[in-house]
Every structure is written in C-alpha cells, then in structure tokens.
Image (tube, rainbow, N blue to C red; front, side):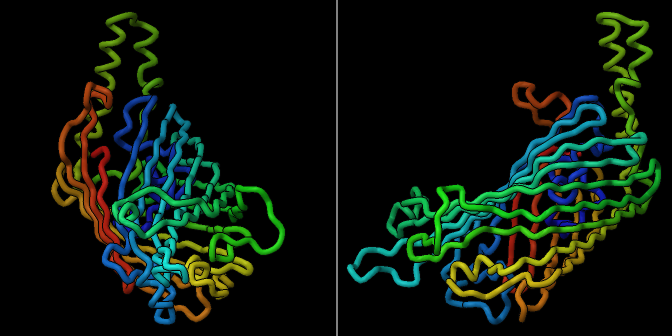
Amino acid sequence: MTGLAGATNAVAQGVDGMASNAAAPAVRAPYSFDWIDYDLTASISFPGAYGGTDFANRGERGNRELIERTDRFLYLDAGAMVQLGRFGLGVLADALQYDVAPAQPADASGRPSPGLSLEYVRAHATAAYSFFDQQLVLGLGARVVLLRLQERGVGALDRIGGVFRSGLLAMAGAGPEVGAVVKPTSAPWRVGVTARAPVIGEDTGAPSAGVLRTGSFVAPQRIVQPWELEAGVALQLGPRPLNPRWIDPQEHEQEAKSTLRGEELARERRALRSQRQARYDNWPHEHVLLLASLLLTGPSSQAVALEGFLDQRRELVGRKVSVAARFAAESEVLPQLLRMRAGVYIEPSRFVDGTARQHFTFGGDLRIGRFSPFGLLGEHFVLGTSAFVDLSPRYQSFGLGLGAWH
C-alpha cells in the first residue's frame, strides 16, 4: 500500500486492504477461485533509518536535539483474513517502535539514565458482506490502538536488543469503523468510502487521581486517534478487466452436485476449478491502474503530539480538520514477473504553525515461484516478494515483504 501512496481505498481487497477500507474482507479478488479462501500478510520497514527523522512533520521549528536522540525506528505489520462465499472477516495490525535516548547520560549519582522506548500499535478487526453479485460490498469492524511506554537502560545489553528494564505506562482504546466499495461488473472504475470513529485510549492500569507521572515524565491522561473519513476512486486503462464477475463455486458446481457422486464429483469439481483459473489466466496483462483518494482527519481537543510528550512541552496539535490527497499508478511491466507502482501524497502538518510536505513513493512486486512447504499452502500458491520506498523532506522509509503473487 505504501508504494501506492496509500491511495487504495477504492481497490481495497485482501488483508492489506483492511487498512484503507473496512469492506476489504468481502471483496473477492479475480484470482479467488474457491468458496473458502484466505489471505496472509507480513512486512517490515525502517522509517527514519537514516536518522534525523521528523516523524510527526513538526517542520523547521521542531526540537532538533530531540530528533537526534530519537532513533531505532521499526515498523511491522501482519494480518490474516478468511472468506466464506460472500462473507469475509480478518484482522490486520501494525506496530511502530522507536527509542529516545536520555538528554543526560547519567544522573547526579553517576548511574546511567534510562532511555525511553515507545510502542504504538493499531489494529483493524472487520467483517464484511457482498451484495448484488459482488457489485456492492459493505464492512463493519473496530479500530484498536495501544500505546506502551517502557524505560530502557543504556548498557551493553540494551545496545544489542536486551529486555526492557521496567514498564511505565500502557493505554488502549477502540472505536467502530464502516466501509463500502462499489464495483459494477465489467466497469473500468471503482469507488470506495470508509469512516472511522475517534478512538480514546485510557490507562490500562489502576486509575489514579491528579497528575500521573511515569519516571521523569508527566504522563498523558489518554491517547486519542481522531475520526477519519476517506474516499477513493480507481480507473483502469487497457484490456485487462478491473471488475470481472466473480463466479461462486457453489453455484458453478450445482449441476454436478445433483447428478454426480463420489470420485466423479471430485473430478468434476477439479475440472470446474481449472475452468475458473483458466478464465483468469487468459486475461490480458496490459493495464495501467490510476488511483486517487482523499483523507479527512478530525480535530483533537487539548492534544499534544508524541513529540510534545517526549519533549515535555505543551504544544497543541490537531486543532482543526486536516486534508491529505493521494495519487498513484500501477502497471505490470513484465507480465507474470514484475509489477511496478509509484505515487505521491500530501502530508498535512497537525501543528498550528506547521506546513504540509510532499511524499514520493515507489514500489514493486517480483514473482519468485510456486511455494508450498509440506503442501500447507496448496498446490497453486505462488510466492512473491515486494519492496517500497517513501521519500520526503526530513523523512525516509523503506521496506520489504513476502506474500502471495497473483
């Protein structure tokens, strides 16, 4: 999704699509040939790998000393999804982790000052159903956020990835989200929309009165993920269909079920599945997919950014609605081998005196080959690898992933 600048709301499908549209679990991909289907994903990326990362887009007024002390950025995501006919459900989670070195390496007694490690986790758990022969897909689910702060030492064990010294604070919350995808059969376009309610996370420990402190930090009362409204459109150029009719295997095999039994029925089912796959394999590969989306993020009352918390500075953010525009294109430049994509998006600053910055994204998928250890993934599973980069002033990210090639 990063290689497409996040402009995937209208073409959301599979487990990765859950990040942009709650209807994604029930959107059947053209290569989905079975009544029961599944999708898995896992990836790792390294935002800020080159240091000096302004992750919150604070701009030139940001605390440069704090930015230089913030490092070891790591971003992980993983998810799983299952489809049963026109119904689908799945879970997708991503986690951002980074460390902040202490401003002073030692306290007055000479003992090393602990650094701070921050983990921020977001998860989507959604269920969806398709109507009118897959031309309308609706989804409903929950968005969950978790913030965890830990103190870390600065000794040798920590430098090689040692354990956390002590837990400081954990906050969690959840809120509903809904989504829809409209994809008329044989049309070269799609539209999508999703709405996410605000999420307010409270301290998961015992409630306390007054000012809460975590070590040397004044802790927040709660964490807030503002409401979001996202809409997107997709247009595919070329002979390859964007919205082919999905053939329901149960309906396709109905006649065979009524007339055949035993091994004859099993052979006929395999033959019918081969027909569905041949239909997909024979489609032309030439296409250019154009994507656009708009993301509105709501205001947050009396909120400070994570940077403000780490800097212990009351600098309010998110005081008004922000707008992010995203555009992308994709094409299979080498049929059955290499798919390339590029995008651009505008990241608004949530700070009052901040300015928006432009991101350029690039990505690709490379086919590796059939892969099914011990037959666990089925005889038709094809493994692929993916890579992406996201480049912007004061921010760089790159990542790698493994998954199914289609």
